Length: 454
Ligand code: GDP
Ligand code: GDP
Image (tube, rainbow, N blue to C red; front, top):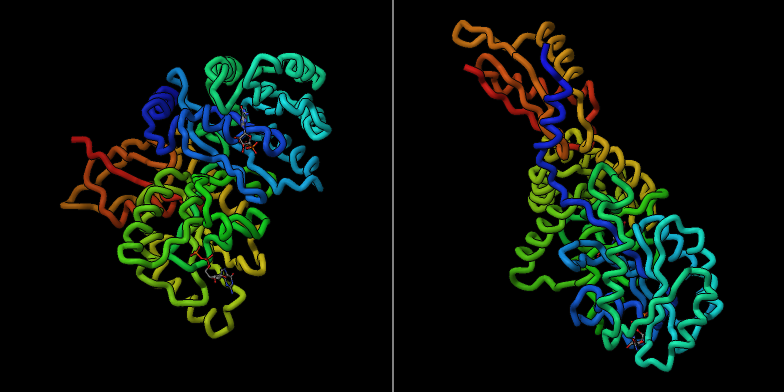
């Protein structure tokens, strides 16, 4: 009797997970103009201007990767608002709530030259409930004379205020050391071991409606179009809350930068798509349902499937689809999507919002499949039942036997079968199909490889 537990442990240890190692998340909150962006630049150690002096420029929550003293972490800048006092308090409080949901530690920034405002107090009220460490930063302490103001910030009830000058770099090294002290080594939410929100690539050929859909998901008709003019912000990813869960849509910067269809644009778009897929765990391939499925659509689908990522297919512009087109599309799907019968298909409209709410459940299903592991004992019982009912075809007078199988990895689920002889491709496909039927790998590729034991 084999020691399945030991085999599982070995497979787990050696499993080749596509995702990056987990990184803890530091969220920065505070009202506008206190210097959050300047501080983020300090933390990232680069001078790339995230700071905007243009009034009324808004941006989404964005995240960046940071490195300090050999430790990597993700910095989430929860963004700015119109500097219009109306609704500000509520907006900043929401931002703090969001940080508490997603971050491993929170930096709340206050402007020491102004002191604690009622908005700062509202944020502090929220953050005092935080189960994660909260560091209070008194910014703009460009000189020593402000230390009395800094001391008054103890009143916020968030512990000791750390005086820094994000602009001049004063004490920023000390602050970073302090951050590393409170930031856990591993992220709070295991989410299957990747840490942080799950990463989604929204991909598809130009004009299928990617940026429209992203806007719809973000729930605000802003930023994507307006962000272009004159801003130097490069928000690589967007954090979007869907169905009570926060998702990280990777490389949405690519969606924002509306490059014209100049020469070579398609090549760059395809490189960008590839990069987005590589850094994601699941891809949403968006197609334009009102037009025939093209080669270019197929190439994007192939990219996701071959990268081994989970996949959801969404047919956009469903508002334009009439009965004739629907029938035509059904034929195109049979012909062009036959390779990926396992991917869930959703008919959406970024314009009307139709079925957009179905995306999050589909993403969750796909990722659950992608992460799923069949215990080795169960797999082998299943294999002997299967081969007893339908034995592998005889080859050159010999009956190949499946000696045992194991799921060597997840993300995507990868099975290795040890056999006494060659297994035909048809039989391997049969096994894959049966695996899908029994264990429901909806939304995920499944790989089956065979090792012949002499
Ligand atoms: P955010 O809206 O909180 O992201 O604030 P910004 O980072 O955009 O900063 C708002 C303004 O405060 C900008 O004009 C910055 O140059 C300025 N600022 C940021 N940090 C400091 C600082 O440490 N000292 C001074 N004097 N000004 C700062
Ligand atoms: P992207 O290049 O994939 O980011 O596509 P865009 O989001 O820029 O959309 C391309 C065009 O399709 C724009 O004119 C959108 O208004 C339009 N569009 C996007 N989604 C829909 C939809 O669901 N229905 C309709 N009728 N038009 C849409």
